[in-house]
Image: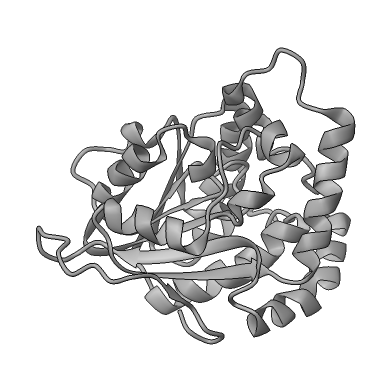
Length: 265
C-alpha cells in the first residue's frame, strides 16, 4: 500500500508535537491508544512510534481523513468514542490531545481513559493553559475551560494516576498565535445556532494546513520556536501532562505535580 507523506501540522500543533514526540520516545510504548485523534495529524506520526497504534474519533468527517492517513501506516482507527475500544485491551500509553477541554464532564471522562491504560502504563494529555485566558476562540471551538498546571495534575491524580509531570509549551510565539485566533473568532463568531458538540466536531479542521508546501513552510517557520520553548517550560499557552497508572490497584501515594525541565520526559 502506498504510504503518503506525513500530514502537515498547524503552527501550534507543530510546537506541541515537539514536546509530545520527546515524551513518547522516552516511554517507548509497545501499544498506544489515542482518544479523539481528529484528522490524524499526530496519529500518523504516533503509528510509527509503537508496534500497535489504535485511535478513536467520533466525528465522521475527521474519522475518514484519519483513517486515510493512519491505516496505511499500520494503525487502526475506530469511528466512535473511547467506549468503542475493544474490551480487555490494555495500552502502554493512552493519550488525548486537545480533547479534555471539550468535555463537560472532564473528570469522569479522564477516569474512563485511565482505565484503558494497563497497570503501570501512562496517560498523556495536552490542554490549553490559563483559565483566565478563556477567550473568543475557545468559545468558537467548543471549549468548556482551560487549565492551570495544578488543575490538570489534580485531574490526573483524581483519576487514579501517580507522579504527574506537567510542562507548558508555546512560549513565546504561542501568545501571538492565540491572539490571532481570538481576533478571527471575534470577527467571525461561532456558527449561529451551533451547539457545543457541533463546534467541537469541527474544531480539529479549523485553520489546518491542507497542502504539503504549506506544511513544509510551517515546519521551517516554527523550528526556532520549538527549540526556544524548551527554555521556558513554566510559560506558554498550553500544557502537556503525563502521569502513570499505578501497577497495583491503589493510587495511594500520588505526588503533587511537577514541571518538566528541558530534556526531561
